[in-house]
Image (cartoon, rainbow, N blue to C red; front, side):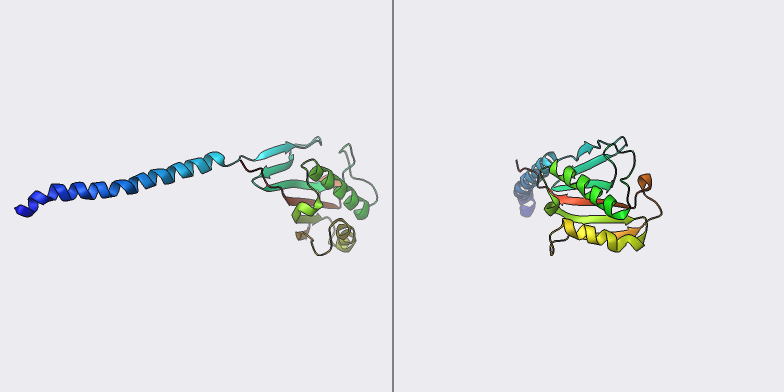
Length: 167
């Protein structure tokens, strides 16, 4: 009977000892809510070409560039002459897109290359190597595809490091 009288006191002590844990949990939740609020939404940059896509999307510290081909300035076809002039025009357009975000090719860390004809891979590589610093080439995947927009010979998409300003 004597021990039963202590039960309410023990229960109260137990509940009080749990309260700091609850308070800590609320602080953790607040921290998670703050992090969610600070999370930045993707930023879309519409293409200047007359097609339905974004030329870039910024997500966190990464700028994703849409696939670029050696399209003429009006966007209605590719430059003539085959893989070499198309690749040069493609890089001109990629450099302009990066410059619009205050970046350069040195900020690119990943490329995905699509070739309409894999027998042109070596010709593409010779041009590609001229645009990046030797020893600092981005990671890259290359594949042959059944066809590209506007009959292009090559298309390349890139990812670039573009740190978001810290708040």
